[in-house]
Length: 461
Image (cartoon, helix red, strand yellow):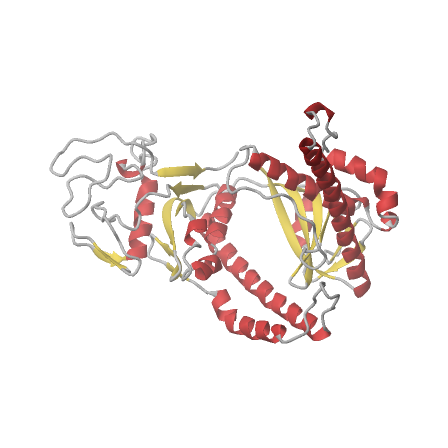
């Protein structure tokens, strides 16, 4: 199985090397801003000509914003725009032009209805202080040195690493990986290099292929598994909030930059900004490390993992819980499980967003009309079962997955537990009957109106 995988390592740059990398990132920004200015000038000219009544066929020719066209235009104007272009690699300018081409395509597809999701705005200029320095190399000398402590990038030369690159070096030596590109990026005051590789992975089998686990994500506990295990929420952002507030107050008292009056920032303001960025980077690293450990363990141990299709964007509108939800990283957990289950030979089942996993009883299937968020213990009024709310949801998710494929016949069932996205079971007392179910007291079944399984990610051969 061939997959695209990234290997990220921290760089240990000398002051001279850092200046060279920053110069390449600045070259990418210059190329991006110049090409964007050309596009906006032509668009503005065409808009003005329309107001003058010029026919559509006689308007100024539109600018082609594909990468080959932008690269051709840049090569013809780079001697005038950037006479110093020979000091940087051509990949630096290609980085800025490629980013602009992608941004313009996303904007165009979003306006034309070809791109799903939120609408994408028009591309903006990149400023020195609000843009993360980054440069991407796709050609030239890109390799890991035999000592596995250094890497070589075009025009940047031999760069030291903070850690060993043995994981990538072993695959390169065995011929099971091929480097496609390398990206140098500054994050939280530290430089990193990320190698995008085409990796040939051997087929794997989970430790328990027949095991099914339901994962209910939350804020009080990061995850509650159907096995009864509770994964605590470390709350890295909440733990660092005191230091973040103190540094933010300290920074507000320093002399900040103000380009309206051409005032530069003070050294103390810049030092406080670096300290603040370092704390945010540490929180992100701790969160990423914990999520990787959790998702790797689930994917390697269980053959089937079931999660919910949570509306994280909608949940963030809750002002009281938005920060805690963002700190937990629900979307990242699902993203990591999607590819790690494929690598491990298992499958990921994503339950429909409307499946009532929290309101349904894991014992009899009765669904409550309402269940307040403050009710942490689920008590069924039909069968009398009482258990933790999150554990009940995890059990429902696990039961939903077990019915996807009938264990006795091996045939795929129509939907989980015979329920559509709004269905409780029939014949319930003091439970609201939702559309698609039989009335209470009737034994007939109602054809399902839709599957409770949103999608299934299976192993890729």
